[in-house]
Length: 177
Image 1: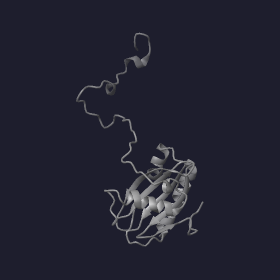
Image 2 (image 1 turned 30 degrees about the vertical axis):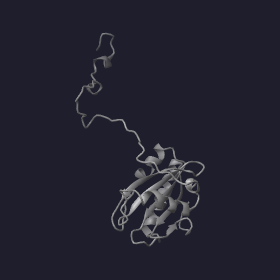
Image 3 (image 1 turned 90 degrees about the horizontal axis):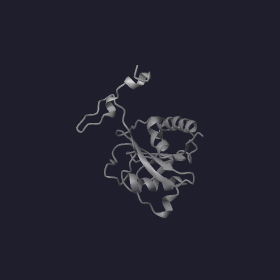
Image 4 (image 1 turned 135 degrees about the horizontal axis):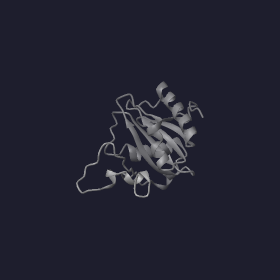
């Protein structure tokens, strides 16, 4: 026991002693922050994302034109919206292969929670150019809608972008609220 009898007075916290050149140990906790990667200015007509066409236009303007985007592989993106359905930004969740992209609700909603998004629009591309949804697309959408309901983040739509066209699961009647 310490001089005053408190047991924690004897504890040492080596991670609190910052020394120049000290390397972080793998077991030490870290502080995270979210940073903006790049500005994505949008015309006034795209600021409010209330239709699948506007979401697809946003995709073509910002996602497909990014230097890291590869049109030959599937890319899954989440479009973040505020309560008035105005675009706050987007997050590239995952890039996949020629015909598959694997996503998990944890990764899909992580930045939506941090950015305090009220709603999201799920989006991904089909490199084949065919925008029709697959059975896997519908299954993943149902799972993400359920996760969004638990988190109180509304999933407004899942838009699949093809070559020159797009498909909305909500408009196709395949969206399960």
